[in-house]
Image (cartoon, rainbow, N blue to C red; front, side):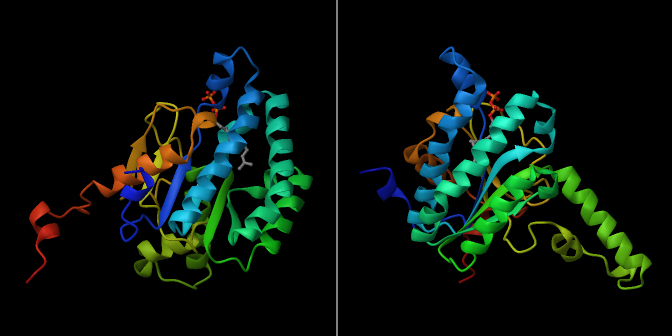
Length: 250
Ligand code: FPP
């Protein structure tokens, strides 16, 4: 049976988050510049987006550019920004055809103006699509996001809009840039690294983590299906015992 056909469509993660890693090493292996890896990574973005939408995944977050990535050589940062702008422009029609809504998280104000314009336009033009929400994490880091949330809540407290005793998990959830999305249930990282790297630290509290040695530019639909199948074979206990989970209560 094909991998895809083994997937239980009634037990899909609602939200899958992906750390796309290994572009540089993939390029280096072939004696090419790192940017060659990023360019080839775009095809993998297309593949997972399509695979996710076809299966019925409702939210997918891709870690496209971290706060730390600003420290890369200037020409690599510039190449990534150009790639982002050209890809978004090219893909709007496909996103609409597939009913995919684009969103971003992160300190998008840090991006070059051209990228900000392109993103705003794509977000506006895809806002009514309802099959899947594709969230690009751009100039994003989880510590930055949590810090912003803490400042926001502190300000509400100082302004008398919230009592300190009333601050709860929901107050934090609503102050994060992911407030409109459910927490990811599955996080995939490519390239053999087993780290979270400042990605959705609050939101991944109960996520299943899947690490694969495949470099991002080689990541295809079948690798995505493997991750989903692996997720479906895990027992998610949320701190309870195995018996509590399997006991139907009848
Ligand atoms: C990590 O590989 C990848 C990135 C920092 C950028 C990801 C960007 C893309 C796939 C292309 C554009 C994306 C969109 C959404 C249009 P790395 O450079 O850290 O690789 P390395 O660990 O081997 O050095």
